[in-house]
Length: 75
Image (tube, rainbow, N blue to C red; front, side):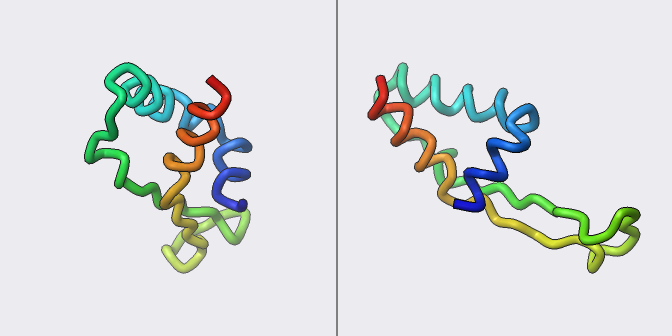
């Protein structure tokens, strides 16, 4: 569950947009096309990254689905 752990650690970066998505799905009872979007985050491998190769990419595809399922189950 690296993707969800990443979101938990950096919740302040994702909170606003994820809450909008969750609220929209909850209010409309339907999934928008935007649910298929994915996030790609670049994690620095070094303390002072300069080149693209100094970063490790992490794909957060499917995280919105996982979060939505948890929210809907607990509501």
